[in-house]
Length: 133
Picture (spheres, rainbow, N blue to C red):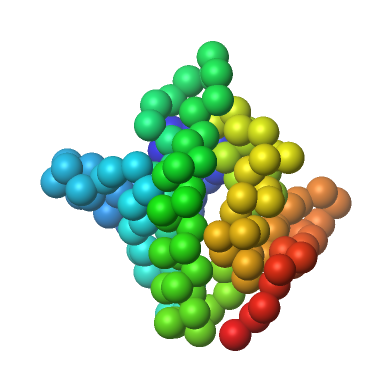
């Protein structure tokens, strides 16, 4: 959580990083695991273990881990009655994933995902499979 979006989240909500460290130190952070950290009354940030290593030499995005994690996100969001927002190009920046593969994979696993992207302002784009709650 020292670069990119993870660093921005760490700076805005330090509890997200401290909870991540607790999970890591306890040996509970496995590929495909998800940790939900409440940062506001109706806002959670998910620590999603979707890559095993760090670096920019090759893709670190693990689609098998996504297959485990994203359905958990979907079910928990439905249980809480909250929307799922994810950053546009999730897993394709520093993690090096291929967006043409990653986007449809996430949308199949979590149809209610709403992609957040920042250009001249904030724009939100719902998945083609968006079903709401």
